[in-house]
Amino acid sequence: MAETGRASTRRQVLARSGVLGAGIAFTGALSELFAGTAAAQPLGNSGYGPLVPDPDGLLDLPKGFRYRVLSREGDELRSGEGRVPSNHDGMTAVAGRHGRVHLVRNHENRPTAKFAVPTVEGLTYDPAGKGGCTALTLDTRGDVLSERVAIAGTAVNCAGGPTPWGTWLTCEETEDKAGTNGYTKDHGFIFEVDPADPHRTGAVPLTAMGRFQHEAIAVDPKRGIVYETEDAFLKPFGLFYRFLPAKPLAGVGSLRAGGRLQAMRVPGVPDLSPIQETGASFDGVEWVDVPDPLAAETPVRLQDFGPKGITHAQKLEGCYWGGTCVYFVSSFARSADGSAADHYGQIWRYDPARHRLTLVVVFGPATDVQLPGESPDNICLAPSGGLMVCEDGNGAQHVFGVTRRGEVYAMARGAQTIAPAATPAGGTPQAPEWGEFAGITFSPDGETMYVNCYTPGTTFAVTGPWRK
Image 1 (cartoon, rainbow, N blue to C red):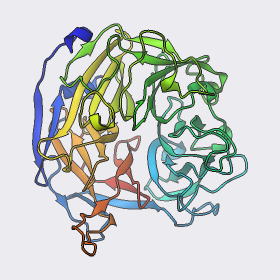
Image 2 (image 1 turned 30 degrees about the vertical axis):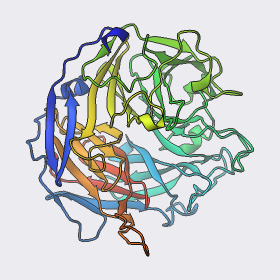
Image 3 (image 1 turned 90 degrees about the horizontal axis):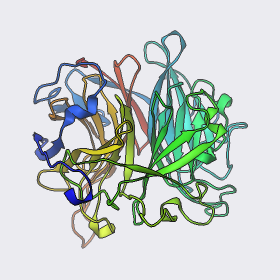
Image 4 (image 1 turned 120 degrees about the vertical axis):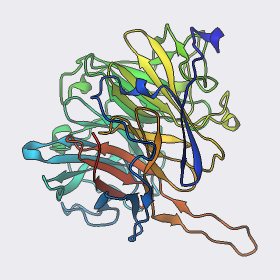
């Protein structure tokens, strides 16, 4: 793809590791992902060792690690507001007073969700929406002190991201308007949630940040720019955005003051999927104002961005800030869906100082796409100095760790089957299925990993001999 920009074709295979009999390939300069993080002692080839089957059938972990179930869908919320909602998704951990930790958790509920987020006065956007967030407060021992609704009446709350001032931006992954699926208001917005005091933020859509199929965000802590991903599964695929706030880094509620929404254009690159040489970089990245951020008539990704067009990518999901750059994930691309090429996952780095986009990592199984290693979703930095990656593919579901050296290891495996193996009468055998992982994050002190099983909705706290 050298003709589409100033590209290098440097490729270095940093890891091919056998995990549970499956080959996994992570190709790229992993050290680039951790700029600005503290130095760490990389793990060996075996990570923390093999996973040990959980006798309780919930979560398999390496020896020496243990988990605590903090919350399960269908149980009673400690606030008495109703039941714990379904579909646990994006999540963050925020430091509270006196050593406490606040967890705020998304619920990616559609109209068919089994357990809706209960409506609460002052915290409900659209009474017909079943999505939203719940917030848990943990004491210094990790025990749950409280669990309550943080925002309700939203829809398909998928991921989001933390702000530098300690709140959570929850993202609606839908474009449904009022009158669709029974909704009384338009959806497809970002909302700010204060996990310590939800009534402080209420249920106010940040309309200037756009109305589209939001996935995740990351905030530049120096400039206050908010980067946003769009998870569009089918063509036309999503865009990568930045929001220029009118009041950058001004604290809780400041994003309501508005700003400018722009989409990324890589000159000569209409689709990111064909670029699969790690280290390929493109200078001169442009940002184009979105004509109609509210998408009153036309979805944003279909709007007219001028004769040069705009850059699309399939399944833009995870997004985080590291060092001086923003990183974002394309979970996969499939030509059968309309992508220009196929891949099993990419991590891109955008350097705002240089206006440069670089392909840092390419994911993919070394053998079979049904095996682990495909479709990365939520990602976060780990206290070991590497990454933790939630898998969202087929078959067994894992949390994978990736060290600074690029070594891959299995950190956790879901043991809760959502569809057991069966053979229908006269049919072919069906393999079992497990719920995906989501919302991976660490406590402020790095001692606890929090992660969700999407279905059945379960929030785990994992402790053990983390290496730092």
